[in-house]
Length: 250
Ligand code: DHB
Ligand code: FE
Image (cartoon, rainbow, N blue to C red):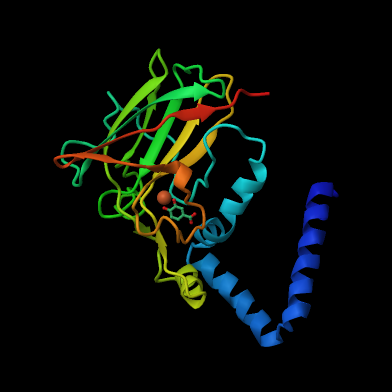
């Protein structure tokens, strides 16, 4: 059965690729290397990583031009559904290594009204840049992943640790491509968030940190200063405020 959207997009894609092939006089050898590369990426289980690194940011930008809430960001390859519900905003357990971070704020609509009972689903790397389940086995490891609700007045308080910057896996095909481009493999430190409320469109975003050395050279080309926290320091704990803005469903 014909799918007009697929036909339209793929025909345009083939045209664009053929134009590029003609413009750069791509050789048959280069073509075969590209096919082998895609095969290798798939066999290494890097399909998602490869596409997320190079394409997801653009898809997010293209599909959120009308969005007036907190800027959207890619999900990335490390989201897991069914993260545990956490008590009192304690995303990091008492034994978690790293600088303590208290992140507070209010979930609001685009007119500034607080949104109570919004679901905030957080995930982040630890202070060594490791994601539970992916970098720390087993596959069910839910470290630094958790869900909570905003309070009656829309406020939330997240107790966690400052994540470390994270190099995307660079041993495999995706890393080789990144290296061939002359890029470094690092993403700046970030905390992922999916926020949703009854009657509101879901928001997928990431929160960064001012002063991060990779903020302006994110391998995923998606970090932005308007999502970067200016941390205040008190001993070995850090604090910041971050309001989350959602747009009503249409
Ligand atoms: C990507 C996103 C992440 O959040 C991350 O930690 C690593 C990679 C990505 O878009 O590829
Ligand atoms: Fe990430």
